[in-house]
Image (cartoon, rainbow, N blue to C red; front, side, top):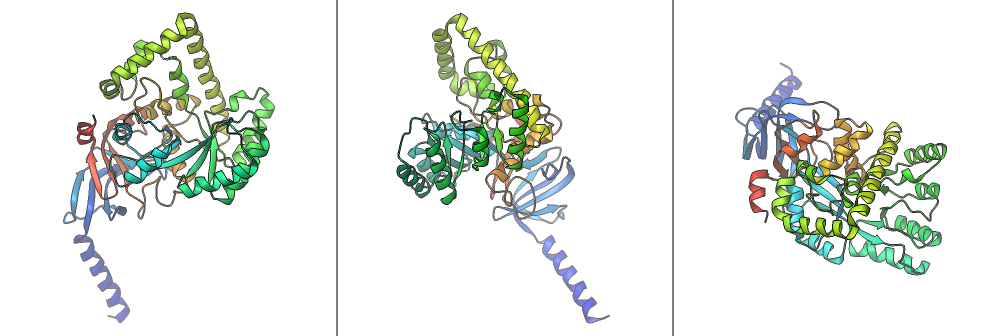
Length: 419
């Protein structure tokens, strides 16, 4: 036998020996894999996790050992979810994010924050029950300042550790130009509302990273809308629809239908007084006539946005999904499922819907090399479900395990901790 052949054989034997002796922090056995690399499942796979990363995908030998074994038989493993539109809450933020984690959300984009948000993120960076937080600094249309002050503000935003800038509005065009110029200089992305006082072509070409709440339904001309969407596709603009907030803000969902919402039982148990009080107060303030008028208006607005989303889908413009859970009966985390159900009305497949809160979101944050799909070497932010969400998006409600880094915890255990 030649020396090279002997050496090759020795390597195979050594590798096989190492595989048998493999030690993982977590090993998920015999699971159906939804890698999100393609629209298909891989049956009966074992996933090994070491030092917080996916180190093995395949069929591990029976002798393989792990500190934590998770039986994935008849279950489905997929990447953890991103909630791409979240608002900071001073009212028990720990519970808010615990609910998000319970719903399978492992990363969240905070659209409106306060200094306390950064402190919370820094304090909870290793807290299993808190998703990875991307925190935005808000700028409003009444924030009037000089160009020099805008330059200094953007520099401060970067220095303080914010991840991006969220515009609720902008005072004028020169200030917008200064914002975008300095955001680029400081490597900060800018995203936010569809700005009414900035020409839409300019907004898209400026490097604006995402438009929240769709916004394009405001364009009356079909020809111009088509042209703008073509421009958005070329310039990699992301759209975050937040349809669920629109339908919930003025109670467009009939009260008798509220119990059908994802996470209703959990949310009602925790937020019953707050939800019922706010709901009743809004109803009383609006009055019966205005209440019906506002609810009808918002319901029609959702329909308009869905029509535009059909065109957005046809042009392959990136969609990211966010729950915008601020209203009564929007259970944090679980309202993302309601959002996906509404986006689906624009013709999106279940696979496309799952992409909005996995690989699309990871790509948005330039994290696609470490998150968004299940591949060797990627970060282990994963969820185990009892049912297949590729068959029905409502099956995202069936999260049984959440895996973050070297730790996997059952949804049942997490639920016991939420107060």
